[in-house]
Length: 117
Image 1 (cartoon, one colour):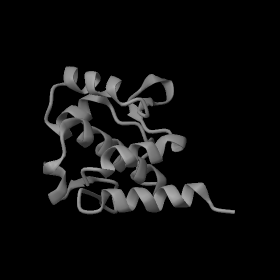
Image 2 (spheres, rainbow, N blue to C red):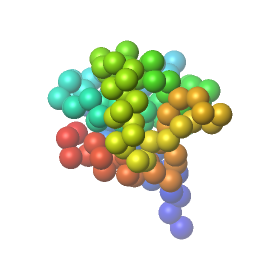
Image 3 (cartoon, rainbow, N blue to C red):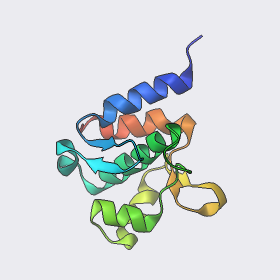
């Protein structure tokens, strides 16, 4: 039987390669491919990078706040909220704080950015 979580981790790593990195402290580091993405794709990449940090035990939560997404992507918080309504696989994190991609939707997020990465 295939371990779905392991497959997701491998696929996320492949999708984010050359776009972003997560360092040993869970920090998000932009790579050369990040600049070529549109704002919606950048938001999804940041949320996926937080998922990676969470899976590695480097972040307490896989959810990313709107303010952080705005700062990392370089668009207004209003735009982030609008973009988040356009991507159905990103949902509100636990207790309504931040936004995340649930484990069962990881492959949808990868497919969304996969065409550009």
